[in-house]
Amino acid sequence: MRMKIAIAAVLALALPLFAQEPSFSGTVGMDFRFAPDTPLSVDAAFTLTMDVGKGGMKSTTILSLTGLEAEHLWMWLDFEGITLKTGLTFDPCFSRWTLALSGGCCPFFLGGWFFLGNLAPACQPPDYTIGLILDFGVGGEPGFLARSLVGFGVTDLSFLIDEDPWTDVTLVPGWYFEEALLHFAWTGDCWRLYTTWSFTYAGLGFGELGVSYRFLQPVVELGATLRLDSSFALDWVKLYLGVTVDPVSLYSATAFDFSGLLWQEIGIKIQFSQVLIYSATQFDLSGLRWFRVGFELKF
Image (cartoon, rainbow, N blue to C red; front, side, top):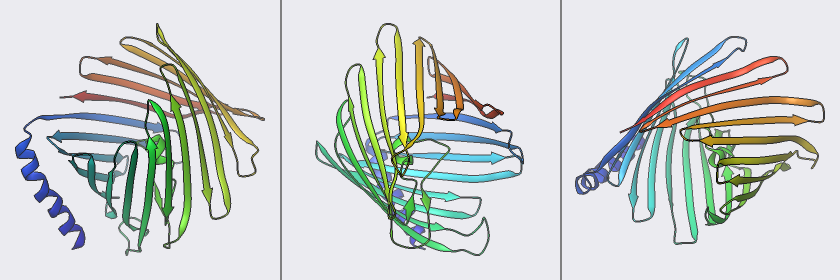
């Protein structure tokens, strides 16, 4: 009932804002991922995003060979620098409700995420839990950025940094401190330096240091990332090379440790007019790990 009231409230607030701002835009896309695991993994994500004035919505439907895997629905409103978001996730039965509020006064920003989640297997008797993320930062990119994320009953906070569409934060049982993430970055015209540190109740989770340099003519980006484990020992190193010659962008990312190659990823993007086509392939010494291909159309 509370979820229905929250969604109804958001829609009620959205209607007058939509009426004030008749502008309309959005994207529609498909992302297909193939992984030769055991069993075989084939997933397709269909995404529709619409921005109407000061509000919008996003729907992502994930399908596999067995049928519907998940549905993610987001709605948001912007109030002069303050953003209210609410989202529902089904897998295919109810899995999570999210309510987020963020905003600030330059150069500071503050955000909060509240989760009501179901830890039970899909469509089994529910096992509810709640989670909370506090987000505080100063600055922004380009320039200097400092950000702190603290999760209670929530892990995998790095998703809010990398924003990988195939990952998400994870809810765990209990209403306790689980993870803190500190992220610092400095971005200039050509250079980008950053460091990210994750802490749990047991101590350091991981540390990450990264640097990249961008040549402007032609556009070439070189980067390196170093990951440390909880004992401050080297976990892995990643090297990145990207080249853009409009309308084509190519990149290669290679990760390795003291034992040798961990994985190699190669990708391509083609952007023309309002259409983006892309693909990426990742493999290791044993063969293909996964393959992705997709498109995005703006309107």
